[in-house]
Amino acid sequence: MKDDSKDEGRTWRLRGMATELKQQRRGIGGQLLEGGLAEVIARNGTRVWCYGRTSVEAFYLGYGFRALGNAFDITGVGLHALYVRDLTRRL
Image (cartoon, rainbow, N blue to C red; front, side, top):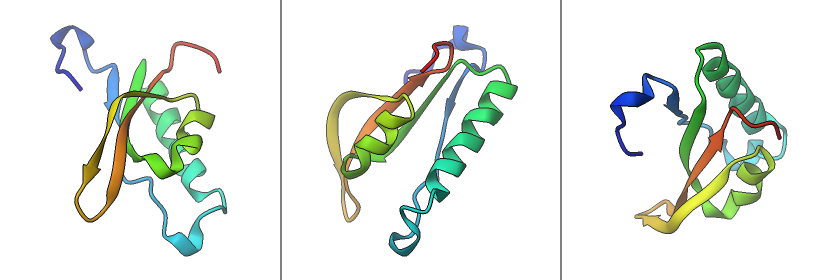
């Protein structure tokens, strides 16, 4: 995301939430995401963003994220999008 010096550390990037195929649909990714969101909120963050696979877009949308811009391909991994969530709004 654009570097904004007025942001003062309120926007955070989340990474590494993907789970192994055999471990999916067990709530692990959701627990990781919820833990990350709780940590950002505890540190006075107001917005989070991540790059996520478009094939699991419903996962991100279910947690209040919205997709921004066009999907893009990461070679060998697949289509991704930029997902953003404003933490100052209630779900």
